[in-house]
Structure formats: C-alpha cells, structure tokens
Length: 446
Image 1 (cartoon, rainbow, N blue to C red):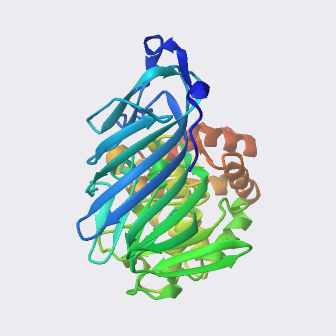
Image 2: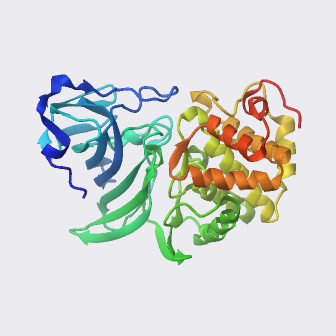
C-alpha cells in the first residue's frame, strides 16, 4: 500500500477550512457532466476487494492517492449503488454524505494546492449492471465493464477519462475461481478456502478502463520479448483463440511504434450479452461470441483489441465526444491487420462501407452520448483515417501515427490536437477535410 503523506505535509493546520473552497462535484465532459469531480488529480488507486459469487456481495477498501489542484475544503468521488461505512483522509476520520452517486467528504482543515493526500474508503453492497456496463454475472462468471461511466459501480472513482492513474487491484474469491484484472499478475495466495489474486498496472489509465473478470478460467502465463503474456480462456472456448496476441502486437509495433505496456494478454468472457465493442481495456477483454467462427475473423477481433492498447488505453480521448480517437483508430488497425493476414483489403472494406454509410445521421466526432458505440466513431472514424492516408501518402500517414502514439503516450488527446498534428506532418491545411469526413451531413468525395 502507498502510505499517505503526514498531516503536516498535506493538510494545513494553520488555516481553517473556511479559507479553502470545495472541489467541484461535476466533471469536465459535456456528455456526462454528473460524472467526475474537480479540485484534485488522482495518482493511484489501490483496491482491496472480496467478492462472494453466491450472494453477489462485494466488500471493498479503496485507498486513493491524489494531489490537490486548488485549496480544498471538501472533495467528492463517484460511487453508485454501494454503501460507505468509513472514510479517512491521511488517517483522520472525515465526515461524509452520500447522494446522487457522489460521496462528499468534508475536511476538518484544508488541503493546500499542490499537496498530496490519501483518502481511504471502506464500502460494501451488491454491485449492479448498468445500461452501459457495470458488474455483470452470467452462469459461471462475473465481470465488470467500466466504460463509459460505470467505474463507480464497483469502486469510488474520479470517473472521467481525463484523470488517469495507476491501479493495484487485490480480489479475494472462493478457492477454485480465477480473477483477472489490469496489468500484470503480482501473486496469489490461498487461505481458509479462499484465494486472493493481486494485479498491478503501474502506467496511468482512465477509470473506465479498469475491470475485473472472475470465473473458472484456464490461466496461461508465458513471455514474449521479455514481457509476461497472460491469457485467460473459459472451458467453453479453445485456448488457442488468443495464441497470436504477441504476433499481432509485434506487427503493430512496426506501424505504431513500441508497445506501450509492460505485459500482453487477454481474457475471454463467456456471456452472449457481452460485446467486445463496449469497452477498451488495458488488458483486452473479449466476448466469447465474438471469438467464434472462422479463425481469420477471430484473429481480427483480437487484433482490434490489441491495437486499442496504443489508441484508447495509452492515448486516451480527453473527452467522450472524441471517442473516435480510440475506436476509429482501433477499427482501422483491425482492417490493416485483416489485409496483412490475407483477408479483405482495406480499400475494399472502405469502399463497401462508404457506399452504404448513413452520412446524414451518424457523426464520427461528437456523435452524441447515445451513439458513442455506434458505427460513427468506429467505421466513419476509420474511413476518415483511410481518406487521410490517401490524401497525404503512406509515408507521412504512418509516421504521423507513430509520432501521435509516442507524443501522447499514457496521456489524453483531443481531435483538435490530431488535426494540428496531421497538418504539421503533411504541410497541408486539413480543417475542411476533417470537418467533412468526421461530421459533415453529406457523403464526402472519395
């Protein structure tokens, strides 16, 4: 666990809290302003959880290390459907209220701007599924999808894409069950008929990328280019469905630059209601039904999720209206892999979608909260990239993708930044091009 700074280091004992101001209880995203909070920046989440599949009960302790971005008298976190039993700030009890999906903590003395502090919350309840994701339970498995705003359904979070942090997740379950989470497996221990699994992702990621999958998995751990490869497949699926993960990542490295994380791998969820397009994970999460059929189709699904490690997990859209920066890029990478692997050419895929796409209806950028997972950010975003490639040429285009992935690695980005990067790389003015292809109401010339 990360120890909190001393009270003298992070809490001002000389200045009463009335001289400080409450952090905002609203985020900075136009689609989901009720999610996210202001006044601080999270650096690290440490989640210690115990889950009982028989009852669906989750007991948790969240230790959150953050830095104040203003003089704080009060701060809030997102948490829905779960009950908080105790809270401390730097080891001191903090009075709190829970309402409207927010846990609000009042500080007896203020936290100065720029100071680090640690909040620890104990909570429990039965986490539930949400419209977008949340905690899902099928016959033999439990798993959680946190995108776009369901992280708070299972842990207290500053639930907005722009606040990225490292994660350590420890989950205790009945013996015989496997727990998969983000990053690398740091250990497991059996005691009194239960097993505790410990996972750690040290590089910053957005809360909506955090996940847990629990079930009777076949867990395989190997290495690839000196990094661990961790795959988890249910008994209903052949283990080989994830066998080409390292090969795919190597090929993408040639296009996008160095693989941005310290481990490879994936987990397959056997739930017919799950769609792999619903989330982009630091450890790719696949739905079983998406990994059936022809081997080439299966590999394409894996390729799309591997590509999302560069575009989505590492380079994360700063706001949800710019989701095409992850989903459009990952979709285009999937088309590139399919062509490389002997499938349809990218040109033929684009031609087919171009001729049938509802240009008047679905935008790629700013598609609306109800269309985040539509073909707008996905297919139209990918078609925009191919049109850009044709306009500026392969050499400039792929150098642009490499520099984009490197310059924004483990950070956030906006569409405006990508437009400027494309203009700089190509020496062309591209505002009109992107306006037409990303959000124009009529079919662009191709």
